[in-house]
Length: 144
Image 1: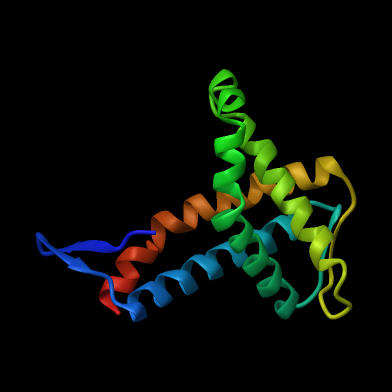
Image 2 (image 1 turned 135 degrees about the horizontal axis):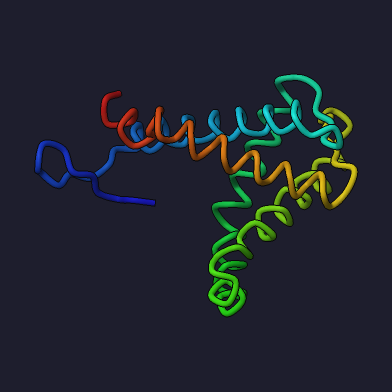
């Protein structure tokens, strides 16, 4: 996470409000990706906006805290695969999200198998990439 931002050529510290706004924008972008993946992949089952937001929150937290460890631990595989192994890491994190949230009765999210998680992770990545280009969380937070 960036601690400083450039505003008008001047380096300034991000305020807590700006960090919160950027987090919420990233969370909503991830939620949109999860929703699109659930609509396009038949093996991903998602019901309701509350479940969508919870899946996006857990997936975002796993991406923020666990993914860097996985990337560091599998760095030789990432180099040998020219980064393609990242798709498998994203697949594992999506499957872990489904497993974790499967323990809560109020969250309706399930994935049928590996390939469903794989294609879901690819779709979430693509949707997040595209939406981040249109709705840059850092830029939105600075304008807040």
